[in-house]
Amino acid sequence: MNYKLISLVITFFLLQSVQVKALKSPHGEKLKKECSLCHVTENWTKIKHDSFNHNKTKFPLKGQHGAVSCKKCHPTLVFDKAPLGCVACHTDIHEGTVGNDCGRCHSQNSWIVSNIRQIHQQAGFPLIGEHAAADCNRCHTSASLLRFNNIRSDCYSCHQYQYEMTINPNHKATGLGTDCQRCHNMAGQTWRSIGHGFDHGVFPLVGAHNIQCSICHFNNDFKTKLSTVCSSCHDPGPANTSTPAHTTKFKSFACSDCHNTISWISVKFPMHEIYGKIYSGVHNGRWSACTDCHQNTTAYTSYCSKCHDFNSGNLP
Image (cartoon, rainbow, N blue to C red; front, side, top):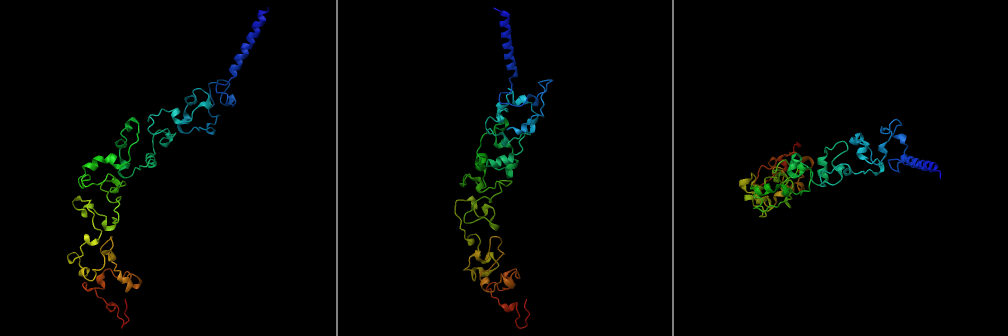
């Protein structure tokens, strides 16, 4: 038997097998690119980074990803096996407290968060008023550990101490609820920004009525229902007005028939639109006070001839 010939045949097939293995790409079977696209013949470890356009893949290289070594993301060199999610390469230091969508807070340019206000707006708790300047750790007590556990967004959960310690008025004793926004304004700079958010029902706090609560609610009594009739707070008697006719000639009229909530001086008597059209036509804007025409503030009588001399034709 020719052992030498047999040995040569076996060696030949072994060499062929080695060559086949050597020709097999370490990048996996799905990569059909020419080797020369990235490699040079002088040295296989030298990579031509500009030749491959990563922006045409599902993961464009933007920001800091453009300066990262290929092996940092492709340790096995099988490119199609590389995951696309951030947490595949970056350890979640927040321990799942903010979810896996890193792009909500971070960008590929920097880990520094620059859209904190937008994040809070999307979460339903806008940073307005005093909250815009508040220390994050006061609400997010776990922030020093880079954990942002879900916290309650109602005022009382953070401001329970202020609610229980306030004595003017005593919130607990008077039965005021814990929905702070009913009275306090979140956009205000202090707790004293009061009245803007409270639904005062059938008696809206507008104009001159937007005043301190204690002016109407004596002794911090917010349980007793107050009358909405003007005279319950504004006595139209002679001692409180320079117009005696309030208790005689105008007694049948309600305060709101002539006055508004902006100012007591801004008066419009409803009968004037029926008789004389004082608030329209040529009379409109000529008179600043009732006494311009009515000098007798008891009877409130007046005649056209007082201003208009019909005989001489001298009309104002």
